[in-house]
Structures are given as structure tokens and as C-alpha cells.
Image (cartoon, rainbow, N blue to C red):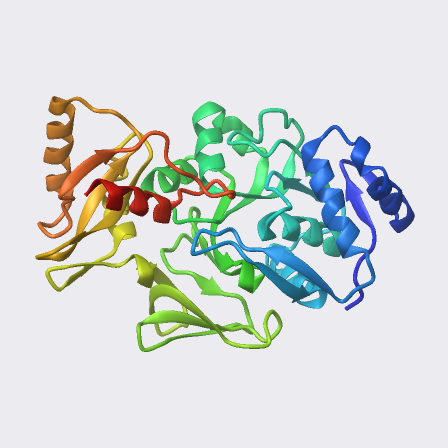
Length: 359
């Protein structure tokens, strides 16, 4: 497939010559997001078959990968075909093109001849958006922040895909109250964005991810997901995501293999605990393991909030109502502010290292 060289950006159709001119003059751009867009386009239009992409660092040290542009085009086709995106539809870019999610929004717009509308990459990206949007990709925090501020703005978007982390019940509840079609995605930089989707609301709502056509999944000996996507990668990708499969080749993610807490021989998945207690907590939190001489590991609840002794006691009582004996955190620790990765996600490894110094 030929690499597309034109892009409609904020209502203006740019030929390759126009894009190259703006790339040359990007140092004069006052808009940071547009600078990032043209930085990406400079590499996209350099005539080389490959391009460098950076992982987010949420599952380890951030690293750079060299991928084929043809594979990015195939990924874009999977998404634009699935959602039936047509020329001149409006797509919203509210994620940084420094990472794969933002890059792929640009590529999808070029492949499907969409009008790419840029806005601020903030927790509330729709603040200045008044026009109707046909397709948008967000991280969960942007979605719930927008819903809490101006839920009517979300209804101006026909379809939203949410990626980058799991979805808590508050997001699912919010999605059920709006007419916008909301999907949760599964993927990573190595798969060039998502390879599977699940509907969060509407008649097709499901807890199970359905892979795109042509993508095969299986489990390894650890019960971690393996992905075979020939159009996106030349080799099978082995993840650290513990999953279960059904008879239709759909899957659910239980947690990460390297995040599992083994306490007294019992395996505990932090994200499953977090899902159970998210409605109880109204501030950022994370379940992380702390080494223990007797039990091996113990689950700790780390919160980005300072609580009084009575508030801690009340919180503990609520946790005991929702969790099993093994799941109840052994301690509640306050860390303010939470360390974050460049991508904006909570840096769990940094939190774990901070706890090692305390306990």
C-alpha cells in the first residue's frame, strides 16, 4: 500500500508540498500539538520504509522500536474499516503524537481522508471543541474528566475509543448515560495501537475483547496472551497480560503477570482489587506489593490523599466489605503526588521502590 502524503488538518486540505512547507516552518508554530504533528510527518514523509516509535513505559523502561510504515497503514485500515470511517468525517486528535496512539490518529486520517481536528492534550480536551466529531481516541482519565465537567460535549462525538489502561466502573456507568458509542481497546506500541475492541455501552456491550479479523490469539504456559498478527508484526508477540479465552476467540484480561501479588501462596491480581474498590475511593490510588518475610508479599493500598485516623478506619471498614480476607490491603500509605510516567500513567514501579525504602 502506498504511503499517503496528504492530510486534511483543521479543515484545510494539505498536499505533500504544503505539508513539507509547514514542516520546514514548524519552529514558528505556537501550538505545541501542531509542532508534534509536523515532527511526526517529517519522518512519515522522508521516503524511508520504516519509522521509529516510542513505548509508553507503563510495562517497563521506555524504548524505541523501528516499525514498517506498511504495518501502520494496515493497522489504520483495520480501525477505519471496522468503524466505517468515510472521507471528510471529523477525527479528533487529543493525544500526543510522541506516542503510538497519537501517531495512529494521524495515519488513520491520512488513510481514510478524514478531517483531523487538533485540540489541547489535557485532561479536558473538549473544552474548546464546538463542532461535531465522528471519531476520537482518548485515555480513560480524559473521558471521565470531560464527563464530570460537561457531559453534553461527549454527545457531540459519534464514537470514542478508550485505551491506555483498564476501565473502572465509574467510566462504564458514565458511558451508559450518553448516546456516544464507547469502545475499550486492547493493544500496545508493539501491535501499533489496538488489535481488539469491546463495546462499553449500547446493545453490543461486553466484558470480552474481540480481535480484528486476521488476528489470532492464544495463551502461553503462564496463561499470558500471545498475539499472532501477520499484517502488523512479523513475529508472534508474547505479552505479560494474564488472560482467559472463550470459544469464540474473545478474551478478558485479568492482570499483568509481573504485577501478580503472591501472598501465602495465593495469587492476587491488583487490577481486580482496584476494580472492586474504585467506587469507594474518590482520589487516585494503586494496589502494590510489598515484600514480607513470612507471607512473601503483601498488598498495600497507596493513595494520593492525606487522611485522618478516623478516615483511615472508615476506609478500612469499607474495603473489608468489598474484598476477601487475602485481598484486603495490609496497610494504607499516602504518597503525594503520585509519580507519573511521561505518558501520564501512574508509575507503579516508582511507587513500589518508594515503599521498599519505607518498609
